Amino acid sequence: MTAAEPSNAGPERLHSADRQSNLAALVLSLTLAGDVVLYLLLPLHAASFGVSLPEAGALLAANRLVRIVGYGWVARYFQRHGPRRTCTLAAIAAAVSTLGYGMLAGFLALLAMRLLWGLAFAAMNIATQVLATAEPIAAARRSGRSRAIVSVGPMVGLLAGAAASEVIGPQSVFLLLGAIAFLALLFTPKLSRGTPVPLAHRPRFALPSRLDTWSFVQGLTLDGLFVIGLSVLAANAVPQGAALAAGAALALRYLTEMLLSPVGGAAAERWGPVRMLVACSLVCALGLMLVGSGALWVGALTVVVMRGMLQPLPAPVAALTHQGSARVGAIARVATWRDLGAGIGPLAAGALIPVLPAWALYGAAALLLGGVAGAVATGADARRRG
Image 1 (cartoon, helix red, strand yellow):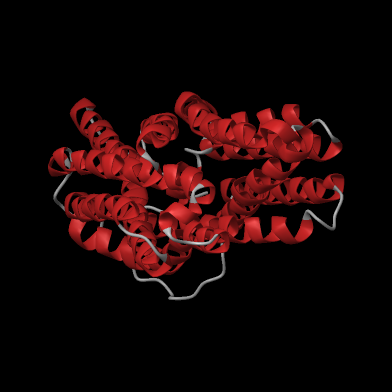
Image 2: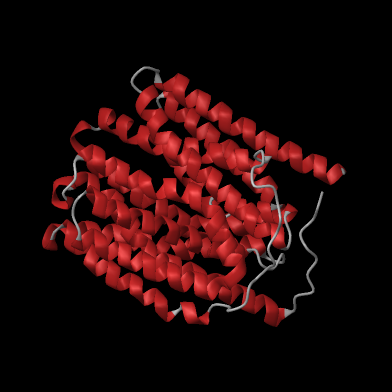
């Protein structure tokens, strides 16, 4: 196995790595609330934004589609220009797009804002993961803390945005969130100016690695199929409170990330990120099987909790076998494959939920997730023997 890069980092260097990671996470946290609140308000108030419900669905998917195409370009820009310039431009773009949700109406205008946000998120997402794994020592713990910081903004934004929309209207909420997003520019000047690693030369097209495949399946099952399916099953289980139940589940997702990502990172630091990623994936697969067997809320809680611990782990796993110039590209590819899976997941859910029984759909998803987790573990064992 190719181990993480040896590091002679002293306390000052580790402190600097912690600080840079926390700053990048804070920038993303301040700008992410607008996107998350749009997922909550746009489907409920599509007419207020001048779009139909199908157009609202397309707008919510657009930012993932542009990231699939743009992650490679964004990663190369980050490698050339470093965290400070990348995150400064991304924060400005994120704030402008959030203000756009509040000031513009109609599909084309909002589509432009969604595409702008997609590229901004790609840049900040890469920055948070690369800076969290910049030093091999305590990379998993740093990644967990970073994910917890990122989750604070969406968690608070969901609660405050939902309440404020009842008072000032859905679009006005985004004017407030856009102004808050500009506060991120107070922190971007403190990020490193220099390029973190040199550019890597790799084939333009390559088959996905085992971790890439796992990331795709994670997006397909946990970010796509599970979330959409939960809403449908909740509507059947609690017809009078389905919207409230789905909203609470969305907020619970970020609460568990905020509370449990540091736990997952600390556990990965002790037992290894690959081992924790495999273990959390297998328990998530168990939760999916429980959902399909009729134990809806027990299974959903299992998935949500374990997903919170799972969130910070892919970047440290990628960093184990990709050092120097290859690390940024590896992290970008993992994020790209996850977005691809998360984009296909809702489409698969809409097509399969009406025709397949829950036990078959969620059982297949559980087997798929467990299978790719086993492949990651097998690959790690083979590298260790090598």
